[in-house]
Length: 519
Image 1 (cartoon, rainbow, N blue to C red):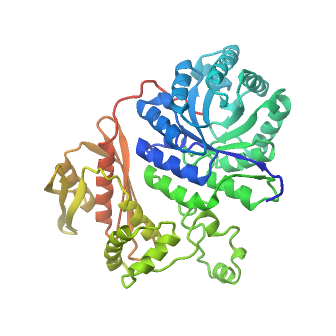
Image 2 (tube, helix red, strand yellow):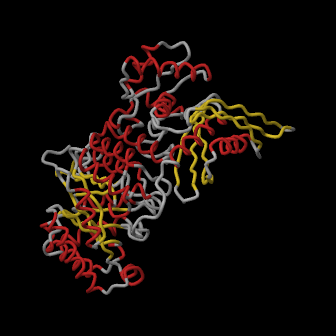
Image 3 (cartoon, rainbow, N blue to C red):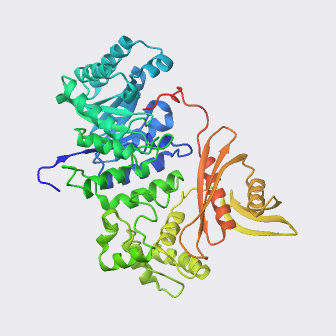
């Protein structure tokens, strides 16, 4: 890192924009778990949610503001007094609160969505930013759809926002429309043309509809932006947001191009990625930069030869630098508890004696089913055992039969309400039969929206990991994961996990319609 490098503010919106990914809704406990990990990661700002959107979101933001130390805690609000009131009420308990207000400035948004004239928009910006500033000195303003806004009008809007008290100006590429040279030039011109630009920090919030969110964010940094808004794993609306791990590691890996630094503890990146993936149910593609399963894998003979001679021939960063295990320790049924504990500790999970003994028993069950147990298997087993303690339904027994001339049949035993209940059902296939049997036992009326199966690790005896998404009659959705060397068992575990989540979901519509109000 170059001496006297400027600090880039990392504004994480995983809990707000990231949670708007279809099916990624988190409950208050899960939001808190992510927020605490983001604090360990070292993000500067956590946008904890959109407090006016629902009582549940308000409560989650308020609890994060009270309990999470270190980062600024931010709540989003439209340029409406009741939104700002809710946002301030939620974040005011934080040591470093921030209110983030937004209003669209593109002609298409003003005409088609807001039904407001340009002057009305400018007046509203000035009034509502000042109102937010009356509560909190730390106010951020975003002109929604800035990239498609007429530039001279955008300059006016930004100037008025700063005059009214905005200390951060965020320029969103709301629909992922821009390309790097254009977006970088826009940031450069704004910093030159807005007369009071020196009184605010300029930020960017890029969406990934053209696959350019990280690239646009980085070129904005080169042109003077000093805050980047991003999410873990790049999750978010539609094609997602700029990926935190990609931006941070690009800055760290290329100090020759970026004379800036971040405060991110990069060794926590992989753990943060796994946590968000597990809680949202959104799987990480194997070739995802930095955190994908293949990011530090080498299969080609030429690559392997070069890597063994000098790792830098094919790795531009070390796996340890982002918290990825540096190597595979192959464990099997003959491995002892101490070897298992050592590997778990190397993976960042230091279990106490009692927990290790319990985990070792589960490990031995898995090791009897497959020849080798890989790091990915261990992490999946850990995640599976860290589920919600208050699960109502627990899978006790599963038996299926199917074949060319057999009707697929499943028998299920599930414990709940202090008793064990059993049902048998037939279906179009063994998984369908299992799900129908579970429905008969639990009597929860749900619809299967999505089913995904993937291998946790390599080999014919690899564990299968199943992710399902369910919807109840009130429209609430939830995801569940299950893993096993038997994909039918994994499917059953995932379905039961999703059922436990969906019955905890609050039903009913939020008090206001915010479906179109997103930056």
